Image 1 (cartoon, rainbow, N blue to C red):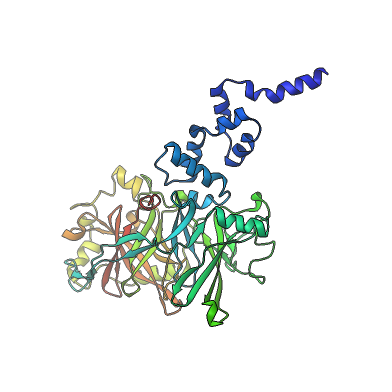
Image 2: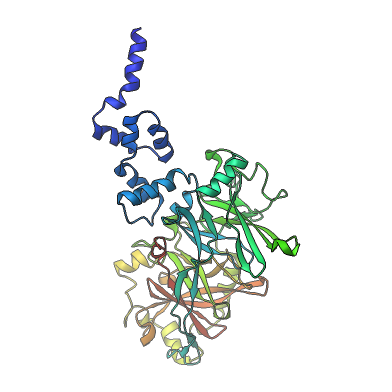
Length: 469
């Protein structure tokens, strides 16, 4: 009897604590545990419903949340409970796909009006086309670039709400069962039907032949397979428990078909893999100020998105990059065909550390101008596709420094040895050609494509600007 009485007291111990201590204990629970706790008794239910219990979870999982009045907290609580476990989509914010050649970049957020997790495509308009000539090398064209980045709010790529989850539950309770999203019209008499599929992470050691997304050149907490004989319907691809579920990858199954009255069967059926990046990989720091998501000017291909990386432990340079760098050694002139420049580039190097530049012996130079800077396409084109390098500056320190710019447009900017990635139509015969990377500022970079005789710009994208739209 004493043991039974003691056990009963132990079970009631939490409810006998002061209210503030109960709240403190609950603050360590996740959303699922809170839901279960609320079912224990009325007292704990009342504690679980407190806004103060949920606000830290909301901030951690829904970065775009800014309003924390009672009504808003109730809506966010809906996302964390009813839409579980899909809230990882909003926590990670950015997602990019392996769609053939071009890929896609979306921002995932929680829409409080529709109470749905939505993923909208990020796109950019390069602005008016114009150019000017480079005063440093008058035969080189500089393409002006004033991009306008926006979200496509008309046709969401992802839309997960309570209704779509209920429809899945009635068909099958399995975690890996696809979530059928609303059909949308993409062209007259052509409709697209998409289903969201949770994924299992890639369990094996990577190799050059591994079919996975994201590719090995991008940092990732998890990767998923992109090849399947069963159209990703087998147990090797779909999680059956939360512990098997990837929170860094997923898949979309998409079918395009003519309107039903036309009698045509589906005309296209694809599965795309999606992934995110570790937030630290694209978050700038004092020592790595160029890390981030950028948008670049790719001439006739339009605007494309890329991630600029400053890796702490960089991978070996690809063979193509080494060949591209070797070509530079065979060239006497680093910057332009004008022989006036040879003294600056190959001489004592007065312009390398003065006239608007940062001294190579300064503390700031040692802290910031070290290591490699590399850019990987998140979206691509028919020549150089998504998931491939677009340019690499092997050393942004003194070893890679060509000069400190003195011309008005780039005054004070570091001009660095780099290589740019090009390819033929269909990503064939790719190679790296000599180029020069101009660090205009921490939010703007220019790339001089030496063989093409033109300079194009890249500009940083503020992702947080779009997560609370």
